[in-house]
Length: 452
Image 1 (cartoon, one colour):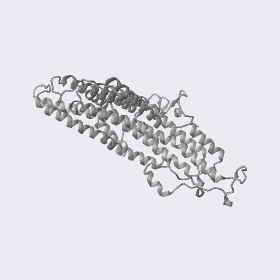
Image 2: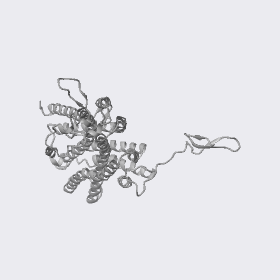
Image 3: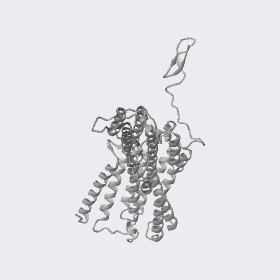
Image 4: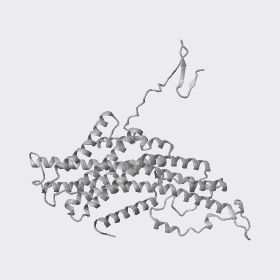
């Protein structure tokens, strides 16, 4: 019989020397499979290629880095130093341009570097967890694919308003101040080229920023779908081992997401906070000439950065809230099982097991859960985790009290969610961040305009 080796596959004996040669060369590097017409990521790859952020081949990688250098570094630097317009009137002066260009370019550079690292290290399919979907239910796969298709629309919802507002501002600025703005050669041609380059730079940077944030939102949405699918195990006759195994798998994926995105989220928080405090500092000076013409670009940049940060924080806190709501669901599942399985003995005796065939004991119909019509007042806040419905009896008919109690204790002491170096990003963390930011704002205003 031919010898079989797990590491090298089937092996054969050489006719002369008796050596065994592996059928697979371990030193050979295999390339990722290319997309095809039936690939669910085919259209998304085309979008990345159109945005010049695709690095799947050497040619596209060179093009991607070239566009990054031109629109993130070269064009903003030339715009700031060559179009400073120091002699322009108050409507066309740019006193806050350095803060705008530095903040937007820094965030765009951070987003581009993180996206390049994610895609080059893990590949697009593995980075978006499509390689894990084969083990999910059809509901999760279908919901995640639909959310992927919606992600490009969501991205356009954030990018389009910012680009239209900036286009209106730049067109007005160049059109009304053509005689004051520095130009080379023909004034109309020079201003047109400069305006187009600035708009392309703004569009590129904002798109890269929002793209990474929307991808993080997409990945978090997958975990929400998995948690909603996981909640169904409490509605059926499941064993504790399968419930624990599935929850451990979800926790492992949440830990992977946290490990990949923790530097990006933390850097984004520090960068946006620093840029906003710098903007607040330079606009609250006593001699600062603040009007919509000179500070409009700064306001639009601040709204862009804050919106991107809010997408990250909201997505992280939402998935953390859903993951921690499993504890509440498991506790309700345990309580319903206990009520169904025991009855209280008159005189304060020890509770005893109920004979279900006798019809005695507490059943879910004996518990008042309120008017069912009141559920309309909750809107879309109620789901499989947050609801007032009792668990049916058949969902725990074969699980003992000790196993249920152990599972609830496990959920209480092993809360899952998005973390940043050990700190959980939940709603309490958002309240803490808001309190720290507000304290710093009041302190800064107290130093500049005297608010105490």
